Each structure stands twice: as C-alpha cells, then as structure tokens.
Image (cartoon, rainbow, N blue to C red; front, top):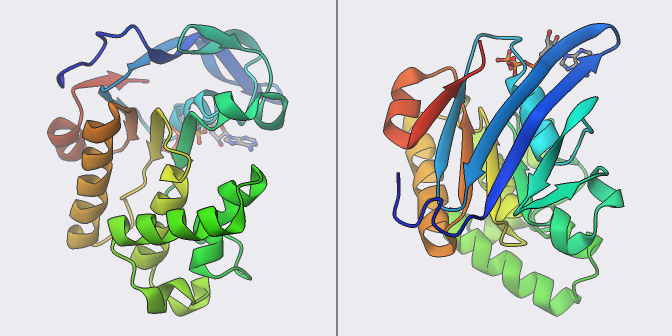
Length: 224
Ligand SMILES: Nc1ncnc2c1ncn2[C@@H]1O[C@H](COP(=O)(O)OP(=O)(O)OP(=O)(O)O)[C@@H](O)[C@H]1O
C-alpha cells in the first residue's frame, strides 16, 4: 500500500450493492472500498460485473440496493442529482476513447468539456486544458484536431486529461490501457501514478491482465 493510503479515513466505497439489467442480476451485495492514496485492482471473468460496479462508483448508475459513499457521505442520486462539488470528486476513464468522445469536438474541447459543464470561465478553462495537455503529452497541433484525425492512443490521452480536469479524489480506470500499445500504456500509467502521488488520489484499475494488476495495484479484488 502506498504511503498515506487509508490513513485519512477518506474513501470511495460500495456497500452491499446489488445491480440488475432487467431480470438479470449482475451484482449481488458487493462491497468495495478504495481509500485515498490507494490503488485497488478489480479482476474477474467477462460479464462478472466489473464495469457495472465502476459505473455505480462513478455515480452513473444507482444500485438496486445498498449504497455508494464518498468520504463518509452516502450518495443517493446519480450524476446530475449530486452536487457538483461531490460528483467532480470521482472520474472514470473507459476502454474505448472513440465511444467516450464526441467526434465533432476538437481534442481541446473534449478536455475542457467538464469545465464548461460546471461553468468555468473560458480563460481559466483554456489554461487548465493547456496544462493537462502538457501533462499527458499532447502537442498544440493535436489539440486542434478532431478524433478522426488522431490515433487511439492520442485520443485516450485526451480522455485521461479530461478525467483529471477537476482534480478528482478518485479515478476509476475501466480497462483504460487495454487497447494501447506498450509505450502509450506505460505513459498513461505513469501520468496516473504521478497524479495519484501528488493528490493522494484513490485509483481503481479494472483489468483482465494479472501481470498489470500485480504491477500496478496495492491489492486486487476478484469479482468472480
Ligand atoms: N446496458 C446494459 N444492458 C443490459 N445488460 C448489460 C448492460 N451492461 C452490461 N450488461 C450485462 O451485465 C453483465 C455484466 O456486464 P459488465 O460489463 O459489468 O461486466 P464486466 O465484468 O465488466 O465484463 P467485461 O470484462 O467483458 O467488460 C453482462 O452479462 C452484460 O451483458
């Protein structure tokens, strides 16, 4: 466990959560706890509910029963029912950057999207976008392009920048490096690691890759 993990008592936690799609029960009274500063790996066979659990923790879905709590406060609604100061404390990074971005936006606009959504003044949004583009290794030229004109790795860097834009206390990575080449994968992991150290963020890493989880996570929870 990294220094500081769990020491503050701050955590993102799912307590006894159950979730279904129609009549299909996907999660049945599952507990998961991510302390500030900690990296938790989440493994399990395809279809075991890893992404569903991540979406509950990201406040995108509401559990059928049980609850998600953020630094000790139970969260009752999903995304826009939750106060901005609370919902921006959790960010999620998905496997497919193409499915997670609007093809009409430039990479700069994609990164700045969450800032616009919370009414950040344009000048401040531009500064924060430039700072994050630098952090994730996107050049000014790439920032003016749209998704069709960049590689998957470049687009995932933009998604990573977007996920960090509000300085989340918790970052959920759902197979976020699975489709990247080895060097982009290492770079994305390094940026997340550095962010985590600076902000004592809690990180969830969902992966089928046992070697990656052994390298990256402080502990691994198996959903099978
Ligand atoms: N939006 C949805 N509507 C209906 N069923 C869904 C939906 N999303 C997921 N499911 C089903 O719920 C189950 C769990 O899916 P989930 O994506 O959470 O699992 P997973 O462990 O992340 O799988 P994988 O490793 O393949 O990504 C699967 O059977 C899936 O088909």
